[in-house]
Structure formats: structure tokens, C-alpha cells
Length: 264
Image (cartoon, rainbow, N blue to C red; front, side, top):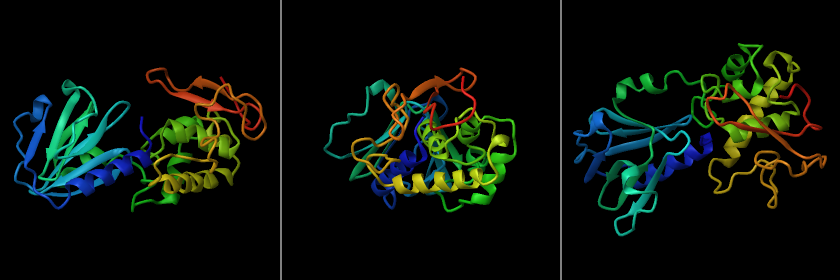
């Protein structure tokens, strides 16, 4: 599942290509909206909300999409060949005279009244990269269930919006606790520092083409995807295991020496 910084960058590309221009092509390839025609309407803006994308269109309409694991939006010029996937994987096409945005493998695609966007994103907690960012609210949400594992609490978009599996592992390493540590077991000063670190690292990566949490060119991440290579700090082999109920593929990475707390 993409991280909040990836969605932020996707929204930026879509906004630059579509906003302020009238649609000359509109094709929503999902049964419920197959007859919807947005041509002739101006795209007002494309806004990220956590991991959700809101494309607001003249006439009080919003096209809501979510990338989840495999979805993507690609932007092409009028003369470019589309290269984001096979034709049968296309779920949405929005085009103007200069650019065409093509949505591939989008698991969530719905056309809403803009006034009713809360039906799609109203459940989300404070957005780490949004104008509504509220660290105090995010902290209260995170601490509301003391028995919950930290990794699961960080991934819950109702607590704070924008953290995915990569940042979950990286933030837990930076906090020196394992992702399986109950939230209620965190030292009193650690949770606020963790919230601040989450905002800091996502904000630092919001416009970077290559995500990094280490600020090193040779190794961009501390633990995610690095098992069984040595920890960048202590040289102990990084370990990996699944976290959650098994309904989703969520490989989790940690250093058994640098991070304290329960493990599988």
C-alpha cells in the first residue's frame, strides 16, 4: 500500500496536468459509472487526503480514488504512448488538450457530490501532510487503545492518515521499540516524539523522488526490506515477520538488538 508521500506526489502530478482545464475526454470503466460523462467540465483541483485522492470537478462533483496495493495514476502528454499497464487494467481516463491521466488497477473509484466527500474520507484522522495536521489529536487517537500493538495503531488511518507499511517499520526502529509493543507500554515521552517524527519524515519526503529515512545515499531505509542484512547501527541481522491478522500481506522489519519489546 502506498505511503502518504507517494499519494501526495501523485496528487501533485494530476493537479498540474488537469487543474484549470476543461476535460475533453472522460471514461470511467467501472459498471456503476460507465455512463457518466464529465467532458466539458473543468477540473478544479486534485487534493490528497491521507492515502485517498479527491479530483474535484466543476458542477460540484468529486472523483474519489484509492490506490491500495496495485493502483496507480499515470499522466501522459497528447503524443505519448500509455505505458502504465494493459488496456484491460484501465479504470479511468481523464484528458484535456495537453494531458491525459490514466488510472490503472484502481480498486476504489467513485463519483461523489463534493459536498458529500466526508462519506469517503470523513473517518480519517489528522493528515500528516495536510492542512488539518493536528499532532495533539493524532496523539490522543494513537493512545486511545492502550492494548493495541504500535504497528497496527500506526497503520490505522483513523488515528493519523498517511503511514503505510514502510514508515511503520522505520518509525518503530527510530523509536527503538518493536512494532508489536502495546501502545500502553510506551514511555510517557515516546508517543509524542513518535508522532513528531512521523510528521517530520513524511514532510521531508513529500517531494523527494526517492524516499529516505536515513539521509544516506547508499542505504535509504533503516530496516524495511533489509532482512537479513546487518543493522546500520549495530550490525545485527535485520529480521522480518508478518504483523496483523493475516488478511493482508504486511511484512514487518525490525532490529532485535536496537528495538526492545515483544516479537513474534
